[in-house]
View (tube, rainbow, N blue to C red):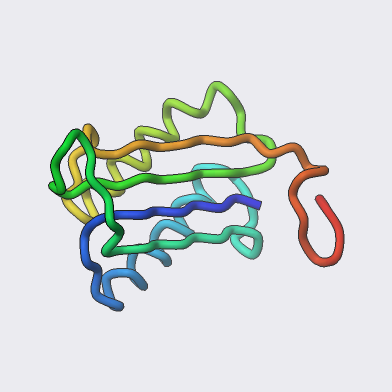
Length: 114
């Protein structure tokens, strides 16, 4: 159910993408308490993206999940920003994070919904 999409203007090698995908997936299991078999992570590098009028390293992130608690949005935003700073050296003030709680009836999987 959790879906994390990271879009950045940095070019990423395939090894770096793979490393980020695996680490982000494992971290989401820990942060959200969801089974990894339902966690989906996507990382897109080399995006046409400017932030604050510059093309310095930046990222736009979507984190969607069923049952995303409102009181966890700030810690999750912090996690995403710290993760991107550690993995890609993108400063937290160059990252937007969209956090979305999806109702079960609007999340489809395996010929149905959750």
